[in-house]
Length: 379
Image (cartoon, rainbow, N blue to C red; front, side, top):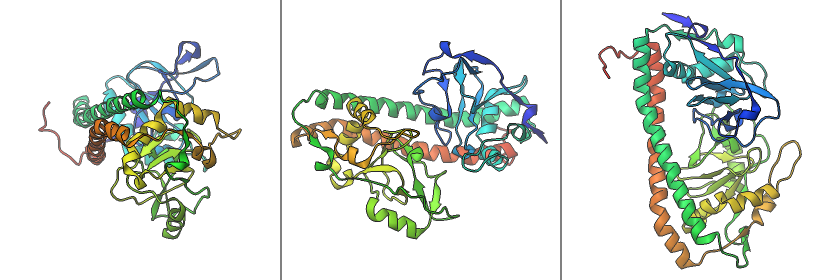
């Protein structure tokens, strides 16, 4: 049996004073990660007096460009922008089950199909509440949530371990190199720096993903929501900006300074408005430059070099001129000896998470449709 989304949840309508919020408990579409990646810390607070409130256990979904699949199960009370929908489970509905109803790709497809606008589509709040959901008993809701939570807990654990390993590597970089005051070189004197296309190739129904800043992940890229381009456009872009294994990408427009290391053996995408650091040409510098580009010194330098009024960006010329210390061979060997096992572990756990995400997203619609019989599964 089916029912409507409105039968199991409602939109939360509470308000909260912005004065009692901080960046740790404020959620906007900007600090919600695509492809069900949760949240990061907000970079700023709104300038209005009050904003939408949410409670621990609510489900937050970005209502702008639903195809980005930005969703988060609230783990604390806080406030969010009006472009974030706050769903609150009704009595008798398992909160985690509601989260998985909304995390199903079918829901995001429905939200896009009923959305309003073309350049920046927004979900239709009335239509969303008419979305068909399974009418399960609370016991079955809880069982489905527990099955999927096993996978999500492992994904979260791997993510937390990776974050800790990245912090350790950054701390080692800071200890070894941040205090150095000798004359530095321009970055382009050490490694080649390029950027992707600045045009917008025609989107295709099939082809090669065109990666922009919003698709960058710390280790790899999210190709699931990228536009596809023809082989001719793919080849044309890659004549000047071919991405290879062990290269580093950085966002140049919008949210600037996001760093992505490419661990893939095969690279099948092109880039747009993204900087390309060709560390694949000197692989022993890759880990050094990951930490260099993430350092507070570089991030502050980038902030000073931004141009543009309505939308900030950093130019390729400014990136090429960034002051950089070139470590001696022995320094680099010592650094790599310590951090290489950390980055190897990060890549392994990142790969495991990709597999777990695929398993979860395959199971989810089958559990919601009743295709999988879970009556004999006990917890």
